[in-house]
Image (cartoon, rainbow, N blue to C red; front, side, top):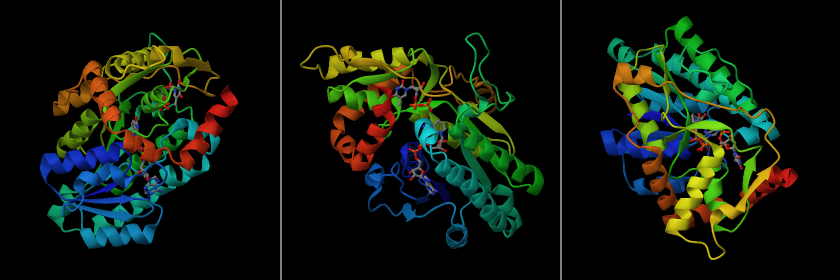
Length: 353
Ligand code: NAD
Ligand code: TYD
């Protein structure tokens, strides 16, 4: 079996569902269930013995040791993190704790466990660290997309904490020989994404007739990838990636935020026409995010060349599926928009208006 951390969050839950459907191999899912973790994401696995869930913190060394000793995984896929840039600006402490200290704790526990394995199990073991393209910083309009050798230039507390964790993973390979793999992926979208991130936030606000907040001039560029493609890429890296290597994962799909928001509005006009007219009318320019990275773009040729992975979805097919999913899962959206979510909206958007 494999151990997944953060498997109740957006990408982690998609990964667990995808992994069990694709491979049938059991998963032990270890997640703290912060505001971003939600067991409803995994409801399709209720009663399925191939999924075992443990609530706990990756900073808790004794608990991680006990899990490893009890379940003896052949691999660890590490998603658990604080993941939202705006939250990292309001409160960086939790990002340092989970993303840096948590990854350190996990690496140390893994090193102890791996060191005791028999030779063939030791040889086959992998620690896959899931990271982000944001560690590379911001590109100018004519710069080439990020390759795996691009310098690390993180600009937000979130990306700095992820960069630190990437460096720890690298060092544990170089110094202790731990068989690690690191993936640096671009912005994901798809089912189960928490409505604090741009795409689900725009859908939730549009359907509620609320303003669609666009930071700055709306011309910041991200490279968007459908979450199912990210899951397939992680499976490919786990199966065939070379130890100690990093793999960039992206959708070959750079788009300014304004285009993303207008595309969602047009799909909602088509699938759920609003009584008050076109959803685009709700677009509202608000005060920019401090230190807002202008452009991210991924050069995903290495993973294609070495492992044969390419995204299966185009943005057109992926965003259509995603809008349909949100329309069909309004009860999920309503549940996650709890009291704590409303407090966040006031904190992040109240001062921008
Ligand atoms: P998310 O915020 O939706 O989920 C994070 C999960 O980790 C939650 O279930 C949460 O409960 C859990 N968690 C948080 N702190 C924990 C702790 N101390 N111990 C155990 N569990 C804890 O995040 P996501 O968007 O699914 O991202 C998953 C990973 O992928 C992160 O490492 C992120 O940096 C990376 N990533 C995300 C994107 C993206 O676009 N969302 C892109 C590239 C990389
Ligand atoms: P986000 O989904 O937070 O991802 P990240 O900052 O990790 O790339 O934001 C995506 C882009 O959308 C980013 O340029 C910031 C912008 N954005 C808005 O314009 N309005 C919003 O309300 C949010 C949450 C993001």
